[in-house]
Image 1 (cartoon, helix red, strand yellow):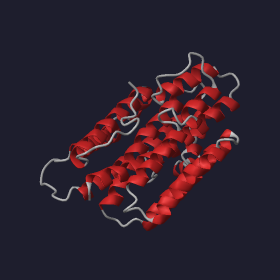
Image 2: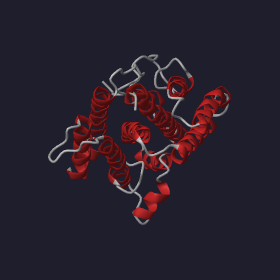
Image 3: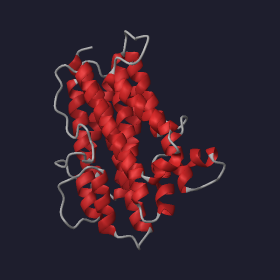
Image 4: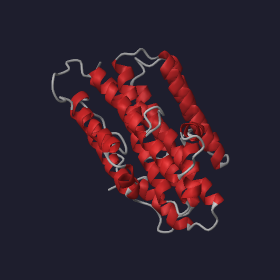
Amino acid sequence: MLSRIAEQIFWIGRYLERADDTARILDVQMQVLVEDPSIDEGLSCQQLLTVMGVEEHPENVNRWTILDLLAHNPDSVGSIASTIESARSSARGAREILSTDIWGAINTTWRGLPAARTGRPPDLFAWVRNRMAMINGIADSTMPRDEGWQFFVLGRSIERVDMTARLLSTAALASDTQIAWPTTLRACGAYEAFIRAYRGLDGDRQAAEFLLLDRWFPRSIVSSLQEAERALNLLEARGQRTGFGDEAQRLLGRARTELEYRPLAEIIEEMPTEMERLQRRCADASDAIRSRYFSHSESHAWTGGVVL
């Protein structure tokens, strides 16, 4: 596969996941602000912008500021509007290998976004999540399981790790974790699976453990890292008897094992710091993938997505 096409497919996977997860994160934030009137709204919104890596913003921020910067404003890098536009641009660059159904779904989403932005924020978030789920479903049912599919899964999985780390940081920084963690589980579509796995035991530690380490839940960090590693293994045609020739495999494997074999209490105690470290590891893996597979790499906005 041409490196240009491979890179576009990789970034389609990332941008779709980024739009989906940004909607989830904003949904959590808005629900926490509504349900906890005692919360310091300015501080909470400032923390969210920091977690999301938004450096340029007004001094005084509130819920409307974060909606503008992270959802509505197409000129704000990393916003839902900007991300969907970037996904469409990448899809245009890979039209020769995308099915008509995938292109049509992405293009229709881009065209429908202005109307969706005029509604209530919860309706916008639900619309974005539903559209992303539909596009991913079409990709799953129409893309052949060749290199293009592996690059799509690889981009989606790395972005899911990065954005789930941001979601966990948001929950850990909340002033009322009794509201934040159940809301975070619901935002990930994980609440029912979590209740079944822990037999009704509902606690902050258990919620963090589930979203970090559960190998069977597809949106957990460890599950997403495993998915990215599988995609890289399939792309690595040569294979080797010892070690890893692919730097991205080494970085992602190290990130997964550090989470799986460290005491959970240590991770939870320093959750924002640990999640920032994981985001940096994802950025380094993305750079390694670019160097190895994309010989004429294009410039993509918010490439690393790291809080500096």
